[in-house]
Image (cartoon, rainbow, N blue to C red):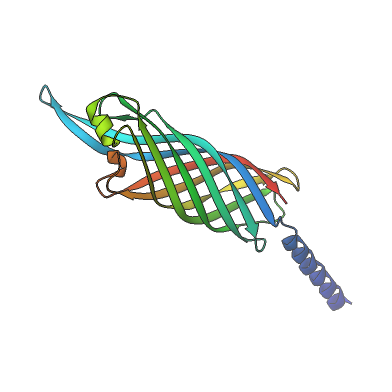
Length: 215
Protein backbone atom coordinates (compact mmCIF):
# COMPACT_ATOMS: atom_id res chain seq x y z
CA UNK A 1 0.00 0.00 0.00
CA UNK A 2 2.82 2.41 0.79
CA UNK A 3 4.48 1.68 -2.55
CA UNK A 4 1.18 2.16 -4.38
CA UNK A 5 0.53 5.44 -2.55
CA UNK A 6 4.03 6.66 -3.45
CA UNK A 7 3.46 5.84 -7.12
CA UNK A 8 0.12 7.64 -7.12
CA UNK A 9 1.64 10.70 -5.45
CA UNK A 10 4.56 10.75 -7.92
CA UNK A 11 2.20 10.50 -10.90
CA UNK A 12 0.08 13.34 -9.49
CA UNK A 13 3.11 15.60 -9.10
CA UNK A 14 4.38 14.71 -12.59
CA UNK A 15 1.03 15.35 -14.23
CA UNK A 16 0.68 18.60 -12.28
CA UNK A 17 4.10 19.77 -13.49
CA UNK A 18 3.27 18.87 -17.08
CA UNK A 19 -0.05 20.66 -16.83
CA UNK A 20 1.65 23.81 -15.49
CA UNK A 21 4.36 23.68 -18.16
CA UNK A 22 1.59 23.67 -20.79
CA UNK A 23 -0.13 26.63 -19.15
CA UNK A 24 1.84 29.44 -20.78
CA UNK A 25 0.96 32.07 -23.40
CA UNK A 26 1.71 31.11 -26.98
CA UNK A 27 2.01 34.78 -28.01
CA UNK A 28 3.14 37.78 -25.94
CA UNK A 29 2.88 41.39 -27.11
CA UNK A 30 4.60 44.06 -25.05
CA UNK A 31 4.26 47.82 -25.71
CA UNK A 32 6.87 49.71 -23.70
CA UNK A 33 8.67 52.97 -22.99
CA UNK A 34 12.28 52.93 -24.24
CA UNK A 35 15.38 54.92 -23.29
CA UNK A 36 18.84 54.62 -24.91
CA UNK A 37 22.05 56.14 -23.59
CA UNK A 38 25.14 55.95 -25.81
CA UNK A 39 28.49 56.43 -24.10
CA UNK A 40 30.48 59.52 -25.05
CA UNK A 41 33.13 59.86 -27.71
CA UNK A 42 35.75 62.62 -27.90
CA UNK A 43 34.72 64.90 -30.77
CA UNK A 44 37.29 67.70 -30.43
CA UNK A 45 39.65 69.39 -28.00
CA UNK A 46 40.81 72.97 -27.51
CA UNK A 47 43.42 74.72 -25.41
CA UNK A 48 41.95 77.69 -23.54
CA UNK A 49 44.21 79.75 -21.24
CA UNK A 50 46.68 76.91 -21.13
CA UNK A 51 43.99 74.38 -20.18
CA UNK A 52 42.87 71.47 -22.35
CA UNK A 53 39.12 71.64 -22.93
CA UNK A 54 37.49 68.56 -24.45
CA UNK A 55 34.05 68.10 -25.94
CA UNK A 56 32.57 64.68 -25.28
CA UNK A 57 29.60 63.63 -27.39
CA UNK A 58 27.02 61.23 -26.03
CA UNK A 59 23.51 60.49 -27.21
CA UNK A 60 20.27 60.35 -25.22
CA UNK A 61 17.17 58.95 -26.89
CA UNK A 62 13.67 58.45 -25.43
CA UNK A 63 10.61 56.95 -27.06
CA UNK A 64 8.70 53.72 -27.27
CA UNK A 65 8.24 50.48 -29.08
CA UNK A 66 7.13 46.94 -28.60
CA UNK A 67 7.90 43.27 -28.94
CA UNK A 68 5.93 40.31 -30.15
CA UNK A 69 7.11 36.86 -29.08
CA UNK A 70 5.98 33.38 -30.09
CA UNK A 71 6.67 30.83 -27.36
CA UNK A 72 7.77 27.46 -28.68
CA UNK A 73 7.67 26.06 -25.14
CA UNK A 74 7.27 27.41 -21.61
CA UNK A 75 10.96 28.37 -21.66
CA UNK A 76 11.95 29.13 -25.27
CA UNK A 77 10.45 31.84 -27.44
CA UNK A 78 11.26 33.78 -30.62
CA UNK A 79 10.86 37.57 -30.38
CA UNK A 80 10.69 40.50 -32.78
CA UNK A 81 11.60 43.86 -31.23
CA UNK A 82 10.82 47.22 -32.87
CA UNK A 83 11.40 50.62 -31.30
CA UNK A 84 11.87 54.28 -32.07
CA UNK A 85 13.08 57.22 -30.01
CA UNK A 86 13.84 60.93 -30.29
CA UNK A 87 17.36 62.16 -29.65
CA UNK A 88 17.47 65.03 -27.15
CA UNK A 89 19.94 67.20 -25.24
CA UNK A 90 22.84 66.69 -27.67
CA UNK A 91 25.25 69.16 -29.22
CA UNK A 92 27.90 69.02 -31.91
CA UNK A 93 30.89 71.18 -31.13
CA UNK A 94 30.06 73.94 -28.65
CA UNK A 95 26.41 74.98 -28.61
CA UNK A 96 25.42 73.58 -32.02
CA UNK A 97 22.27 71.61 -31.33
CA UNK A 98 21.58 68.38 -33.20
CA UNK A 99 18.09 66.91 -33.36
CA UNK A 100 17.16 63.48 -34.66
CA UNK A 101 15.73 60.03 -34.12
CA UNK A 102 16.80 56.40 -33.84
CA UNK A 103 14.89 53.30 -34.97
CA UNK A 104 15.83 49.72 -34.07
CA UNK A 105 14.59 46.43 -35.58
CA UNK A 106 15.84 43.29 -33.84
CA UNK A 107 15.04 39.57 -33.75
CA UNK A 108 16.19 36.65 -31.62
CA UNK A 109 15.56 33.95 -28.99
CA UNK A 110 14.15 34.58 -25.52
CA UNK A 111 14.44 32.31 -22.50
CA UNK A 112 11.88 32.71 -19.71
CA UNK A 113 11.82 30.94 -16.35
CA UNK A 114 8.24 30.12 -15.37
CA UNK A 115 7.00 28.37 -12.22
CA UNK A 116 4.15 28.75 -9.77
CA UNK A 117 5.43 32.20 -8.78
CA UNK A 118 4.13 35.39 -10.40
CA UNK A 119 7.75 36.51 -10.88
CA UNK A 120 9.09 35.63 -14.35
CA UNK A 121 12.72 36.54 -15.22
CA UNK A 122 13.88 36.29 -18.83
CA UNK A 123 17.05 36.57 -20.92
CA UNK A 124 17.39 37.31 -24.64
CA UNK A 125 19.83 37.96 -27.47
CA UNK A 126 18.73 39.94 -30.53
CA UNK A 127 20.36 40.72 -33.88
CA UNK A 128 19.21 43.17 -36.50
CA UNK A 129 19.76 46.78 -37.48
CA UNK A 130 19.24 50.40 -36.57
CA UNK A 131 18.69 53.63 -38.49
CA UNK A 132 19.80 57.04 -37.26
CA UNK A 133 18.46 60.31 -38.68
CA UNK A 134 20.12 63.58 -37.62
CA UNK A 135 19.25 67.21 -38.33
CA UNK A 136 21.42 70.20 -37.54
CA UNK A 137 19.52 73.01 -35.81
CA UNK A 138 22.37 75.49 -36.11
CA UNK A 139 23.81 77.40 -39.05
CA UNK A 140 27.36 77.01 -37.73
CA UNK A 141 29.64 75.77 -40.49
CA UNK A 142 31.07 72.81 -38.55
CA UNK A 143 27.58 71.57 -37.72
CA UNK A 144 26.22 71.92 -41.24
CA UNK A 145 29.28 70.30 -42.79
CA UNK A 146 29.20 67.46 -40.30
CA UNK A 147 25.64 66.54 -41.23
CA UNK A 148 26.34 66.84 -44.95
CA UNK A 149 23.99 69.73 -45.64
CA UNK A 150 21.89 70.03 -42.49
CA UNK A 151 20.53 66.44 -42.42
CA UNK A 152 21.95 62.93 -42.29
CA UNK A 153 20.62 59.34 -42.19
CA UNK A 154 22.39 56.00 -41.99
CA UNK A 155 21.67 52.32 -41.31
CA UNK A 156 23.92 50.07 -39.22
CA UNK A 157 24.18 46.63 -37.65
CA UNK A 158 22.75 46.30 -34.12
CA UNK A 159 22.74 43.68 -31.38
CA UNK A 160 21.29 43.54 -27.87
CA UNK A 161 22.10 41.23 -24.96
CA UNK A 162 20.21 41.43 -21.69
CA UNK A 163 17.04 40.58 -19.87
CA UNK A 164 14.57 41.61 -17.24
CA UNK A 165 11.57 40.38 -15.34
CA UNK A 166 7.81 40.63 -15.39
CA UNK A 167 5.09 40.07 -12.79
CA UNK A 168 1.87 38.28 -13.69
CA UNK A 169 -1.11 40.43 -12.76
CA UNK A 170 -3.61 38.03 -14.33
CA UNK A 171 -3.69 35.29 -16.95
CA UNK A 172 -3.87 37.91 -19.72
CA UNK A 173 -1.73 40.78 -18.39
CA UNK A 174 1.77 41.02 -16.91
CA UNK A 175 3.73 44.06 -15.77
CA UNK A 176 7.25 44.25 -17.19
CA UNK A 177 8.91 46.49 -14.61
CA UNK A 178 12.37 46.57 -16.16
CA UNK A 179 14.24 45.29 -19.18
CA UNK A 180 17.92 46.27 -19.29
CA UNK A 181 20.17 45.51 -22.26
CA UNK A 182 23.57 46.22 -23.72
CA UNK A 183 23.04 47.69 -27.20
CA UNK A 184 25.91 47.35 -29.69
CA UNK A 185 25.83 49.26 -32.99
CA UNK A 186 28.43 49.80 -35.69
CA UNK A 187 27.94 52.88 -37.85
CA UNK A 188 31.62 52.83 -38.83
CA UNK A 189 32.80 55.73 -40.97
CA UNK A 190 31.18 58.62 -42.82
CA UNK A 191 28.79 59.43 -40.00
CA UNK A 192 27.80 62.91 -38.95
CA UNK A 193 29.02 62.83 -35.35
CA UNK A 194 32.16 61.62 -33.63
CA UNK A 195 30.04 59.24 -31.59
CA UNK A 196 29.33 57.28 -34.78
CA UNK A 197 32.42 58.00 -36.91
CA UNK A 198 36.15 57.21 -37.05
CA UNK A 199 35.40 53.51 -37.55
CA UNK A 200 33.69 53.50 -34.16
CA UNK A 201 31.51 50.91 -32.52
CA UNK A 202 28.82 52.37 -30.28
CA UNK A 203 28.23 50.96 -26.81
CA UNK A 204 24.85 51.84 -25.36
CA UNK A 205 22.49 50.94 -22.56
CA UNK A 206 18.84 50.38 -23.45
CA UNK A 207 16.10 50.39 -20.80
CA UNK A 208 12.48 49.40 -21.36
CA UNK A 209 9.39 49.19 -19.18
CA UNK A 210 5.77 48.44 -19.99
CA UNK A 211 3.02 45.84 -19.97
CA UNK A 212 2.71 42.38 -21.51
CA UNK A 213 -0.48 41.10 -23.13
CA UNK A 214 -0.71 37.29 -23.15
CA UNK A 215 -2.60 35.42 -25.85
